[in-house]
Length: 263
Image (tube, rainbow, N blue to C red; front, side, top):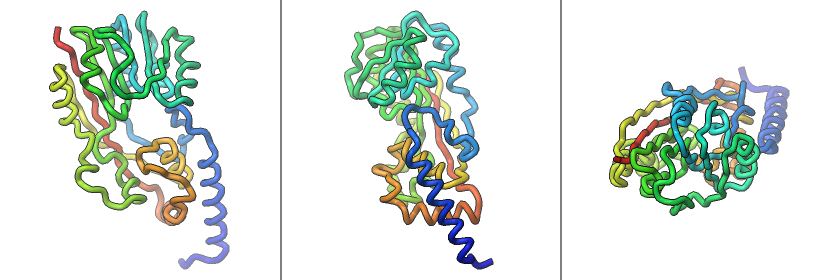
């Protein structure tokens, strides 16, 4: 049926309300619970938080690189005697400190560039969930002999259906970045032995335009420089699509890598 003036008016009002709400809510930390009921993301089969927690329970000294707001590390049932987390973004540093200090973990402000502010061989476990960059030589340096690096990372072309909706088709070198096999090669070049490498492609759905706005404000590297005003025409068109055709479907890519430093 053709759109009536009343229908268009209601749709426009709903767009304005959803966008205003999503554009004003805090995006500090790495907690996505605001999206409950508004977006879904299939989880990798390996269960990173649980598996990381098991390794933490066996460690003596552990480092969580790029901890975000500290939410994943704070969920670990039993932390080692010595735990340190690094983070670069000021709001996340404050959030992580509030979560982790009661657990006995120290949060270090770090620019996420080499060198890591720790001595050689300081940790028998280094973990990182969704690092922006993995500095493999630094990971190898701060690991003790026999130590383990355990990380879940964003894979190639993750959620690119949404990225390319706003930015258009991306070149092969952009779509192919963050290849798990490249991570393997880089880890081995740094002197580490890769003992596990798994990748999965997972279904993600956005149910309303507010979920899209919140996601792009929070995951800032997806559409660099994203603001509602800069992309309002595309957001309006996508809102209409969501209202008339249902959820926007994209696919998240994730890989798990575990590497050990030879004794």
